Amino acid sequence: MHGCYLVNLFYWYRGHCIDSIRYFYAASKAHGAFVFDCRSAYNTKTMIVFLYGPDAYRLKEKLKELLSAYRAKHHLSDMARFDAADQDFLGLLKRFVDTPSLFSSKKLAVVDNILQAETTKDAAAFLRQEMVLSNKEITVIVRDEAVKITGAWSFLLRTPVMAQKFEMLSGAMLKNWIASEAAKLGIELEPPLVEEFTKLSGGNTWMLRRELEKLSLLGKKIVGPKDARATSSMPGEQNVFKLLDSFWQKSHLRLPLLEKALQQGTEAAMIFNMLVAQSRSMMLIKNGFAHKSEAHPFVVKKLSEFSRSISASSAAQLHEKLADHDIAIKTGVRDWEDAVVDIYLEGITA
Image (cartoon, rainbow, N blue to C red):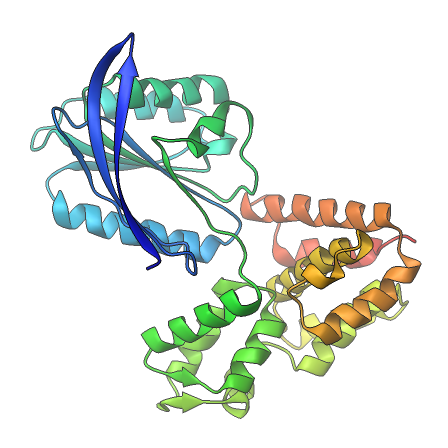
């Protein structure tokens, strides 16, 4: 932990202090973790925690952690989960909030996919009103895998809401996360394997966790690259970079190479995430910030060579398409393989 802060937050309405809530906030810069407690000097008001960002696995784990802590402390309270994408979401949430509880005055509501709410303004207004005016003891955990929060939902990024963003990890932060997750499973990874996973995963923590779980079943305390290649569905370094290079080179072999990789069991999610990671580096290169890329120097060098035949506008268009595909995947509109095939079919223009 890099620091703990005790903060008194006062809610004011029409010139009157209606509540004082103290949050015990412990923040970790390396892992983006926090724990919280919420108490009032007079009455406990509605509290909102907002978890968001593209790293779906770490977001899910944080939600599990918060739910476990809440259940341990308030095991008799009412709890319910809502999907904001459902047509009757707001009505169901209001009914849950307004219905008296039989066993406890406290309630917990988890709201998924908040940015997909059909009645965005009404839903946002309701949450703001509950947070400021309500005397009900309600904790609302709002979750969404969105990268940007704008418009009616921008209040979720301001105090007194407790917001935490889960960015895709890369570089040293990803290496630290891999080592930490391996330790939780009772294994230690040799440095070359940590390096290999960092380069090949594209920051896909879901996939990395699965690979680590498979390695933990080998019965070895220390595992290396040979162990991983015997159990992993991740492709060899040479094959995956050949596949990615073919995309940036606009090679006519890119589709046959993609088909071969998918037939051999390479996960489409991994290919997609590695392409996203390289696209981020390409954007930096085209804008004169190659030195800020967290990719391996060899990868940056190769992308810099490929960038000579790619315009800045084409790189930006590709990055936008990848972002659109990512949203479609995470909202269930399409799957990883369809997205990867579409991207490789279309390729990148000059």
